[in-house]
Length: 459
Image 1: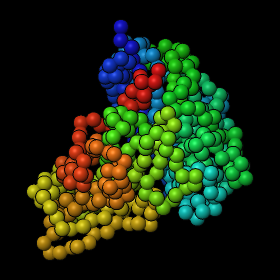
Image 2: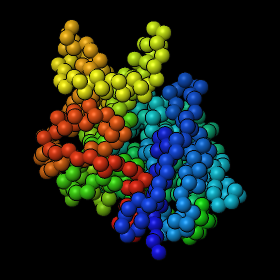
Image 3: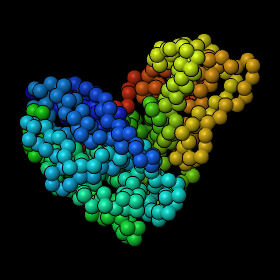
Image 4: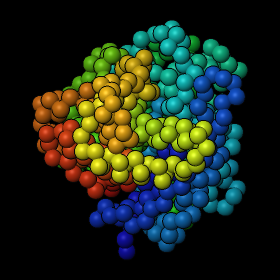
């Protein structure tokens, strides 16, 4: 009888659960549901929070759609999710298992996501420099907790444990009193040294950080515990791995050789390749560098150009045109307009218009905004503008990680993935023009499948 590994990804906008057959690594079943969990920011502090209860409810509904017979044959569970963010809960009573074979969130904070903007540049400049190669940015777990210590210390007194949303689910499934965290998620919180796999305890203590909220660090791919109860048919006692980062799992799902580079363009955009064995990151943060180094597996690292500007800038362009037409009294649905724009751009094979699409800035250059240049009377059509915008997305990511850097690293092909690439033929054309290496598609980056494959390979 076949056995399965369950992979769950708790993303920024959706939850996905996938059953992967243990031996073949084939996906036997999967479901994805939107969480619609965003909480409005009433305080005017650029907060980005999500309703924890809605996320867990979405997880339960997603699990309920998987075949019960296959769930009974699950041999291990892996979770990944949105990195950087922070959730707080009480050591006891962080969930309620009284509703049959599923738990509901109880006595937790809202999830403060990686998009949270309350840590201003002024506040971040007041923090000590970490003993780490990772710079600290707004939305990072440690920075957010330090913000609360300064502005709302009474809020933190309600809770005893902190972690990412995926760490929380691991703790609840296993009935843990505390939180365990892998280096993949710990690095995304800041103030964590990936070479020693240790938190910057002395630095954080001097900064007034509540040290009891720091999770215990365990290896990426290690087991955190076992399910403390039956869960949607999965038997009690099933091993649960410590949660991994969604980015690392998405790369794992589609990087079939170490000479691959993975280009993912969905809401944002990332270009990454594996560093050689033995590579060690810099000793201190490099805030102006466009390339970051993410801990991967077996003490290895990924070189990553992580752009804040991807498919979201094309979506913003569509929203802008929709708003303009509404002001003119013309109504047109966004999906219809998007498809029309792509057709216009396909008819415009080249454009001398130049669009720099960095409307959200970049982490290494937050003050960099978008620009349109080389405007003339002959390149103002929607085909020209859409084509130039798509090319600008690629120009931006290759400026962050030049193609020469990929060639020096021995990258032999580009694996293209992500919803924006899948939907937008113009973007695919510009991808193929941007890189001298061949580009392959069809293997979509999928964090839920990736975390299941990790466990299939390691356990």
